[in-house]
Length: 169
Image 1 (tube, rainbow, N blue to C red):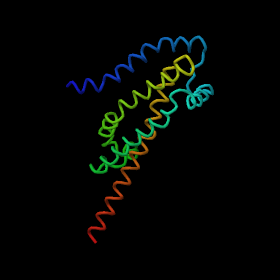
Image 2: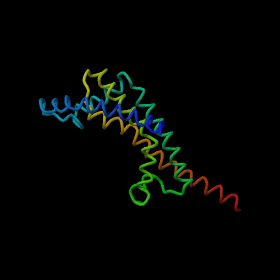
Image 3: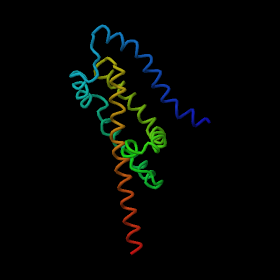
Image 4: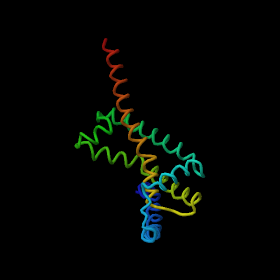
């Protein structure tokens, strides 16, 4: 029970920070009439983050997501589950199981990605836009995780199939 509560502490802290920042963000949107997300300024700010404090997270976070995705993909293949992205799109019977395993694998990583994005926004721009952190952080994790989980599943199945074929000949 204690380990379950410890796992959710980071997520709770991130949610509390986002709730605290939301009123100011809404006020900024009302005052400027600028939603910011997916505007030219949003994409320019992402480029600025690549050269500012915390730029190594654009390398380390996707690498960790790839490692976690590869591990999950091999577990999926061993369990006989279809590749991750394929199953999410076409095998609804596996969707819940895959979603829960994904949540367990990357929950803290996504929370850290959001937190690091909030900190880098403050350090670089001296303001925080929680909506941008909710987009940029999970994308840095989600895309590499999903692709590596799907590919590792296919590769694991293929290599094990070849091994079985060689041993039966």
